Picture 1: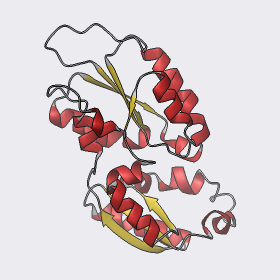
Picture 2 (picture 1 turned 30 degrees about the horizontal axis):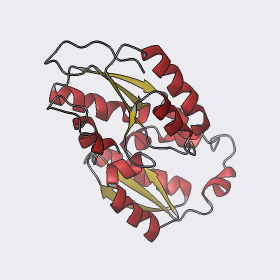
Picture 3 (picture 1 turned 135 degrees about the vertical axis):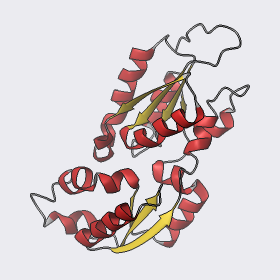
Length: 215
């Protein structure tokens, strides 16, 4: 991607293309750190249920941004695209946050791998997915119209684990309720923002970018 011309000694103009499920957290971090050189655009969060559409929509955003920014950071994991997202990222010379999905970014890749190995039948929710459970999960999977599909989608799961970015009693209560509705045991793990902060810090104006944070 052709870069914009940035005057010397100014931060590189950086475009953040994020999943809509990360919008609140990324916006908060940018504001808290005063990273005014960063611009955020988000793809719809409901692509969580339609990952095959992500690469084409990412390509469209990258085309629209061509020549306007010095750097582009894609705040997605592979997210079920089977490597197709990375091919688009590489084609445009962008950077992507590490991990297969945001669960690993929040929990830490090593810790999440241990969780997944210990409890392979676990369905994960983040703060966003707890807030949007009805829209993204219940209605998004058609369970409001066809409740019998619950066993089709979740028959191989045993536990719902809420990976919490915040300590919020209302959200935890909603996560417990979601587990009940799905017929799953409930587990809770506080992650905070995990590596989301370090990924954005890798694009922050503190000298040369540390591309290792995005590898």
